[in-house]
Length: 201
Image (cartoon, rainbow, N blue to C red; front, top):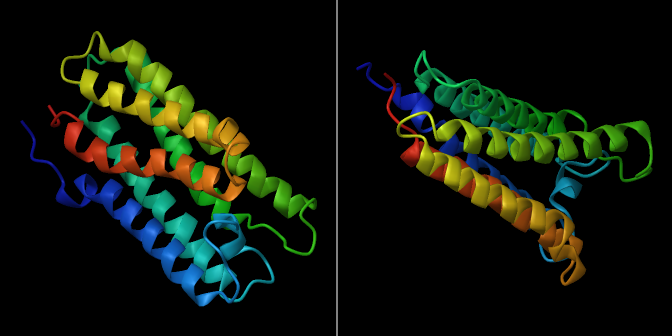
């Protein structure tokens, strides 16, 4: 058995901590910002004080850390891992990159419909779609790979929560809260995956 790389094991939980700290910290500093009413992306929008700093700490850094966590999962897969399991790992990596891309393409508060804002929205949708695809692939692949069933179950639960939050919960609550609940599914997965993924073989 190979020893785990401690830095990679803790990348997921660290990504969650950095994201939450950035949202809370920058939200407190922005005058008039209300966590209950305003979307997370507004903190990093063009024209917002410290917007670039939030985009870096709120999206890019957590996204890159999540990518490290996804790569760690891929490296833990045995050489005989079924194809769906490997695809699931690749989709998790894509989701992490898309999350980081939200910081590279911030919203524009002066023109919410311009190309930059559209790129941000596309990155958000790609993150959610890739996360969903990862859950499906892991579920199919886990049955033939020993030790991966718990992680696949966690992923499915977190994805269902994120999707419902993004598209259903907003009917009964402010969109900003529904968005935060969607992100919560991602954060729970980042923390839980570090505990449930099998050791490298």
